Length: 367
Image (cartoon, rainbow, N blue to C red; front, top):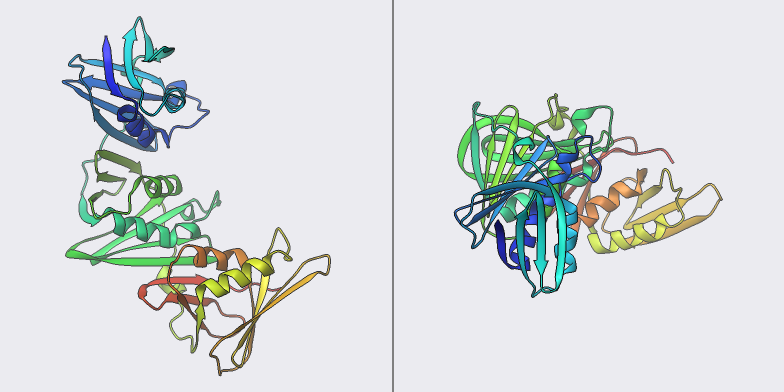
């Protein structure tokens, strides 16, 4: 029974769209598979890890009704290994999927489609919003690096998505730093706060394109659905109470320093070479029209950089984890970045001159 016949990329592209969430090792073997269904010349591919589900489709010339599951990464690796201009056919024969291209033949074991677990779509109270793919991808890029990884406070291992009036904002924190960004919506919507899992955020960042094509987001109390292009992306939510991010963002820091982002980035990268690997701290010493960056390690080695700045306030000597500073500099694109300071024991607030809707807060560290 013919499942698909056509150019290699016509089947490889949608397969790669769903394969990103497939775990290499899983307690349920069928979760390493992709569900492939064909009906009326339309091929549908679906993958899930129980928490996330991605579905996409492709055109085919086969009118037959077929459904099967096959090892996702094996099929992807086979298709990738074929020449770009290869004509590929997928045929189901006695519970085996045969992949043919030129003189190449591959036979893969299949598992029954009816055994494949699907996520049920939530039909609770829904909040639906529309953005461009570019807008939401940019929001995620501005904050996702601040998410925690495997923190015992499970609600930090994700990203807070807040819809309030005609604004949508995203917040991420690991307890040591916090990133916040917001975007204006075309019309006001009912308020809702949800926490997207870390894996969902990273996969969305990979899938979304830097284009003006529409993205529809449907939020319910237990689930988030994303529809863009030919992709339907469904994710469970993290059930927990996110910290009060508004309380963390400093309001009255009176010292403002405008810094060249590329210059600061390069200086920090050089100083980092001679910091401790586990806790790579650097000291930022602000004096009149000068920023001195100092790093040292347990072997008594030291690196020092000086940058000319416009600063005429009280001297401040404050320490930070250099990786937290590098994260914000690497994930923003402005020529300049603004640093708002209080004193040596207060957190620092970083903002972009051309985007006051972005805020990045970093706690100081003792060095």
